[in-house]
Amino acid sequence: MFSYYFTPQYSGAALQAISLARKLREKDVGVFFLTVNHDDLPDTDKVEDFKVYRIKEGKGRFGELLLWKNMLRVLWHQKDEFDIIHSHGAYLKNSFVGPVAKLLRKKSLVKVSLAHNDLQMLGKGKGGWLHKRFISLVDGYISISKEITGEFKAHGFPEEKVREIPNGVDIQKFHPAGIEEKLILRRKAGLPEISPMLLYVGVIDERKNVKWLIESWISFCLNYSGYLVIVGPVSREDKDLSLYNSLKTYEGKLKNKLFFIQYTDRIEDYYKMADIFILPSTNEGMPNVILEAMSTGLACLVNKVSGAEDVINGKNGMLFDAQKPHTFINGLLKLRKESIRYELGKVARENIIRDYSIECIAEKYINLYEEILKG
Image (cartoon, rainbow, N blue to C red; front, side, top):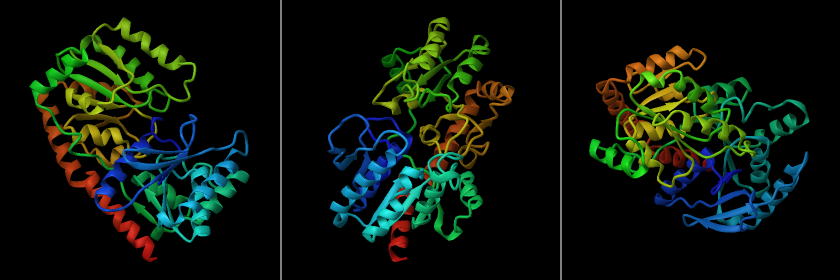
């Protein structure tokens, strides 16, 4: 598997890749990872007992050339260890898996991780022409939402080569907690024991729309009994911490109404202690965090973005339109009722178990791998 970002760097695509790889390994499918060495880490390593090869990329306009040279070098040496190159991402840098696979007489897959992003520059300019050429050599394309499937269609990709497989979630790790466990976890985290606890999980950046969420919460929270917890790392783009620090100042102003948690290695505990999950993001692919929250039995209130409308249907969660703030406020008002939260969370958990467990998704990938190898 190739992922441009990989642990210890935060990446939703990489987290999904590792989750899938764990389940594939249980089913006797061998996996190793190839990624870019962003932080001068060891060139070869192990993460959760998976081999990881880190390669350098160049700087500047033609930085991809060194990346592609190193990708070919590593995969050439490992050519007897794999049959398929599966890229988590379909950007120009990722699309080189197509020609590499052809050279090595292997098969290749690319997965679009973000709507209106991975394929946005396809065919535009010299880089876009090269992107289109490389990606045309790929054997299969993975869409994680109906919106992304529409993008593939709009770009003229052969329908028979596009497979819609959503992200999956570990339903054993992300499971509901009882009231007593919620209170214990809140005490341990230093959070109020009152309900409802509202939760956002994700990177603190512009695309995730966290500023909008906090500003909307400020305008409403004094008339609402609960509090909002923001859990997630600083964005790679926020190098001077200007966005994070500007938002963090509200924590002191809104005593016991807003809390920031920048790092945790037990994210499942925050889902368990919460009552309502909120995602205000302006663009996504298939958000892992929605699946994790639903698997934990939370009532979800989510902005209408790619992937969200595939999963949330009104019976297992609620959608709002960030362009119409009153729809967010109305959602929060409805979710004041514990009975509504319980029913939404119950149906959400049932839907996740049936359609989005990582077990189910891994089986779909195994079927796809077998199909491509036969083709």
